[in-house]
Image 1 (tube, rainbow, N blue to C red):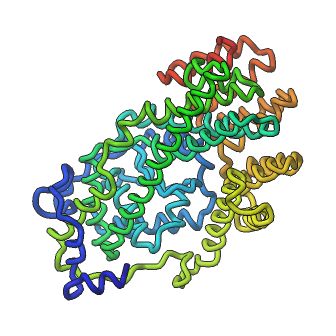
Image 2: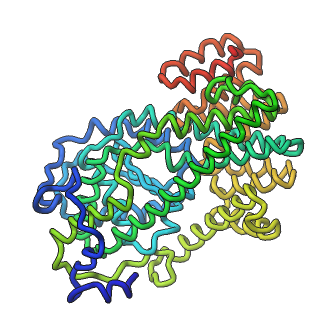
Image 3: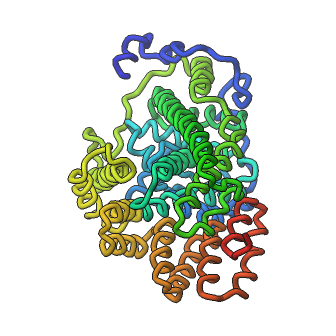
Length: 510
């Protein structure tokens, strides 16, 4: 990329941006001038902060929760502070940063002003300048008080669908020894859904809001002294992610169609209601097959408008290129700032953060092998598991959960449970860890231990709706029918039809 600049730049100016087509003005870009010069912040951001507890509870129930690293958090927060230095904002504007333990390349801003970036994004960026553009874009949403339509409801819906699809994969793995070819293809479909959920179901901003955030985010990174080319490098990575998600969607749709045909040929009932089979199925492979088919339809088709409401990354790159050429054509490039975990870094955080992210990468490699035995070898996965669960990630939910999956694959039940217990005792355990451990206790009919663990989860995840079906399942299994009846209305109050259906089935109302 740097060699390309040397060829395209004219006297070191921003002429490189003319290599992108000069697209029509985006809805959110200023007609003239810079977005930063026309910024009029809100007088008071306090009302938005009131939703932070709910937002963090929802986020904690996704993927493998937050990365419990103060050093990584402080580094990302430092980039944000640099971006906002010199920008006049009221004292009530208090953005926060969280790193989500998910392998996808993604960023998000919740309505309360929490900026979320994934481990996958940190692994794939080439320098701090790229991170600055992502964070500048996300904090711009917070400054403008942009909010995805029905963010809380859609995020809770996302948590329900994503959590349930992951549970389907887990339950399918438990009975894989008796799997038929049909079930094998269903597991594959469920894994497609698991991948798609992090790319498709995220509530997204409107097109004009994304344009406005691109413009202001670009202005912020330029004011902070970052390399402007990094913004286009980010757009290229987003385009790759979108292409990957589109491919996965097409493959999953094909698998869904094939599975539906096979299900009908085998006399399997697939009209059980979206996601409703998750509880009623028990250990039946056909019930989990139904789940994968129904969940995909709910997840992708039901939220298709959100996935296509903004410009594709290639169009966003063209719009940003036109804006940059218009307002910054004489700007001189600067050398990118290395991230602390890069070979070129001299940061005092280098050793700690390099070890952390390399362990997460190893865990991802092991997870790929667990999902598909053609992706690596057992010996390689074993080494990855052993290394990634050492310091500094010895009690991280992400690495310990992958270890648990690997041990489950090898039917090493004692190690499987030990890894889950280690993760759930760590600083940021995920809901998926709780859910898998609860399945073990329920299978043993140890409802006292299951209820105690669930009570802990309710507090940790701020009573997230994704917990409700499992809560009802435990109460019903323990014979506490009155408590079951009292809890079902909580499912209904969210107005999420799929959640209500799951809860009713968990309560025995098939």
